[in-house]
Amino acid sequence: MTDTKREPLFHVSKRAMLPWYAVWAIRLCAVVLALILCAGLSILVTGENPIAIYTTIINGAFGTTRKVWMTLQNMAILLCISLAVTPAFRMRFWNIGGEGQALMGALASAACMILLRNVFPNWLVIVCMLVSSLLAGAIWGAIPAFFKARWQTNETLFTLMMNYIATQLVAYFVILWEVPKGAGKIGIINQQSEIGWLPVIGGQKYMLNVLIVVVLVFVMYFYLNFSKHGFEISVVGESERTAHYVGIKVEKVIVRTMLLSGAVCGLAGFLLVGGTEHTLTTTITAGRGFTAVMVSWLAKFNPIWMIVSSMLLVILERGAGQIATNFGLSSSFADILTGIILFFIIGSEFFIFYKISFRHHEGQANRQKEGVTRG
Image (cartoon, rainbow, N blue to C red; front, side, top):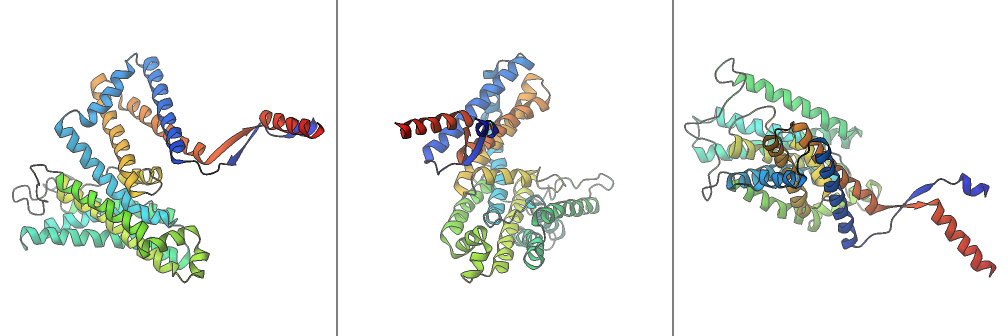
């Protein structure tokens, strides 16, 4: 009796691997519970019809053709940065610097548009933008990788600090290139000549961005799962000691992977400046470098599933803005609904990998065993 009282009310233990349908059933239940809670909160706080609120979320993302393309564009950029940080995450290198690496890519593209517009033809300016953006992002990613490989520095803090440095560099050049002087912003670059602007395909401004990222998804999937480099990344992520034992040069893999990660972030910066915004600001990435961490994690570092997770987050983000507009509510309320849904989705992962055992059930099971033994 005394031993039973000393036992905790419940304990958490690791769950055996669940079949895929059980995993998705848990996630679906989490979404349903989140929607029910959000509906109750909407009625309690605002008196609004929750069905109308959810309909507004969908309309905010897909209500018109223009909204559809805006959603696809936002999703493409977010997905691009998510794909960029994924190789590092698989290696257990926590690259939180996607924001800064994308900003450096955007800065490089903007510099080419401004400095080379009267030097090279349009196609060559675009090539220079692409190459310089990839290099800028790669270098920005390789710096913390080198220190990690050489001196085992903390990559999370290092890459996070690099974001702030990148932001200040962009801020400096925005002031340097501001038009007109004193405006504090660059404005649309090459608005008349459109030098450095990516071509429009099929009459849709964002089509090229979307196509590039779709191709990148499959390239990254095959790179991570079917290439020698992808295998080395997985081994290093599982155990650096094992990697050393089988002859993998861990330091080389760390630097090489972060070069790739930074370069793909730089590509996102190139797509933003050349294909979407045609300008440069310190907020051009809109926090996607941090959101990309969640996208990659939710998809369990699988590039294909990142399409789903990135779409979910973009729909919630755009729908939240539409809620604030349609119902005259504070944008904070829409953010609360978004946060609740994400909390349930992320929290459901706990129940996929762990189970909770209560003391009552354990005691009852033990008594049944003792009864069988005595019988």
